[in-house]
Length: 149
Image 1 (cartoon, helix red, strand yellow):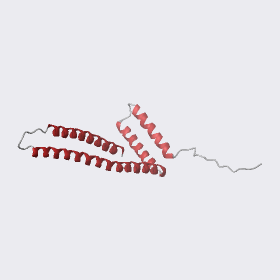
Image 2: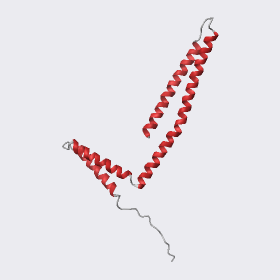
Image 3: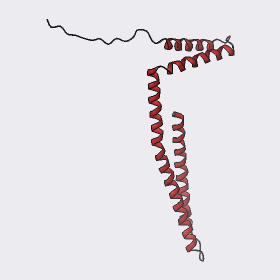
Image 4: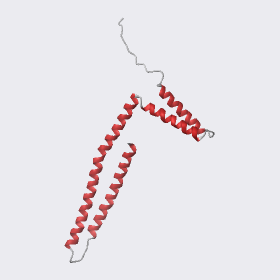
C-alpha cells in the first residue's frame, strides 16, 4: 500500500473576540430599541459602544486591507469618471458657443434688412435643452460618485 500525505484545511472554530463583542452590542442595541423603557441615555451609550466595536473591527489587519482596497477602488473609479465629465462639459459649452456665434453671424449679415433668425434661435434653444439635460445627468453622476465614496 502506498501512503499519501494529505493536508487538511482547518478553519478556526471560534470567531475573533471583537466579532463576538460586535454581535453582542448589536443585540443589545436591538433589544434597547425594542424596549420602550430604556432611557435615551442608555440607548446612546449602547450606540457609542457599538461604534467603538465597529471601529475595533475595522482595525483588524484583514478588514483594514479589505476596506482600504475597496476605498482605493472607489477613488480610482471616481478619478476615471472625472475626465469623462470634463469632456462632456467641454462639448456642451462648445456647442452652445457655436450656436451663439451662428446667431451673431446672422444678425451681422441681416442688419440692414429683414431679420428672420427663427431657425438659428430654435437650434440654439435645442442646444440649450440638450445641454441642460447633459448637465443634469452629469451632476447626477457626480452626486452618485460622491455618495459612494
